[in-house]
Amino acid sequence: MGARTIVVAVLSVMLCSCANKEGADNLLSVTIEPYRYIVESIAGDDWQVRTIVPKGSNPEAFDPTPRDIISLTGSKAYFMVGRLGFENVWKERVATLHPDMRIVDTSQGISYCSGDPHVWTSPDNIHIIAQNVCNTLCSIDTASAGDYRRRLALFGDMINRTDSIIRDRLSKGKERGFLIFHPSLTYFARRYGLQQIAIEHEGKEPSVSHMCHVIDEAVASGIEKVLIQAEFDCKNAQSVAHEIDAQVHIIDPLSYDIPAQMLHICNVLSKNSEQ
Image 1 (cartoon, rainbow, N blue to C red):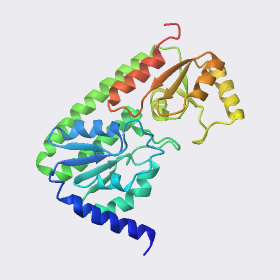
Image 2: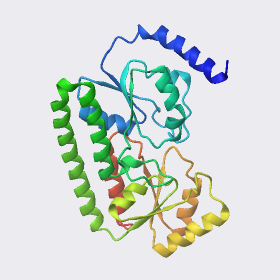
Image 3: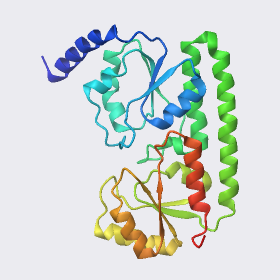
Image 4: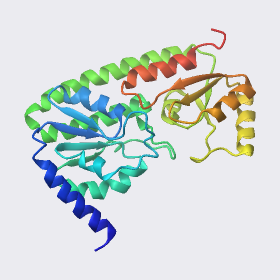
C-alpha cells in the first residue's frame, strides 16, 4: 500500500469518527479571510463560514495538515482562491475525502497575471469571484436563490462605490507607482494604471544585483512609497526605502474587510509624502 493510500485511509477513519460531531448542515469553507468576507456577504446569516489558512499565515507557503483537511467535514462547499499552490496539490485528496462537498475554483473567468495569486485585490476580479460564489449557492440552495442574487447585487454596488472612490483619489495623486516587497498588488496596479516594482524576485530573497536594479528603477520612476506586509521579513524593504528616501507603509491584502483594505492602500498611495 502506497504512502498516499495510507494517508487517505487514515484520514477516512478520522473523518468517520468526526462525522457525528458535525451536526450542522449550514457550513461553508474558504481558503483565506478575504474570501470569507465575500462568501458571508452573499450567503447571509444562515450559513457559517470557516477559513482554512489561519490569520497571520502566508497562504503561499501554507502546508495543510491532515487536521486542516478534516476541518472541511460537514461543509457543503469549499471556495478555493484557485491560484494558490497548496490548493491544487490537495484538491484531489480533498475531493476523495469529501465526495459530497462542492469544490469551487472561484478564479474561473479571471485574467491571471503570472506569479501573483492575489486576484481579489481588484474590484473587477471581486465581481467575478462573487458571481462564482453566488452561482454555487444558488445551485446548492435553489429555494433561496433569489436572496443570494439580491445580496450579490448589493455587494456589487458596494464594490463599485469603493472602486469609484479609489479612482477619484488616485486620479488626484501625483504618484503613479510604488515599490513593494512581495508582488501582491499586481491586479490592483493593473486596475488603476499604477506601476508596481517588486523587491522579491521570483519568490526568493533578492540578490544584491537585483536590489541594485530595483533601487535604480525606483529612483528613475520617482517612487516615494514602499509597501510591506506584516507576514514578510521587511529588512530588505526598509533598506531600499532608506536608499531612495521613501516612506514605508504596512498593508494587509489578507485582511478580512476587502473594501477597507483597498481604501487603506489607496490612501497610502494618494497621500503626499510631505503630509
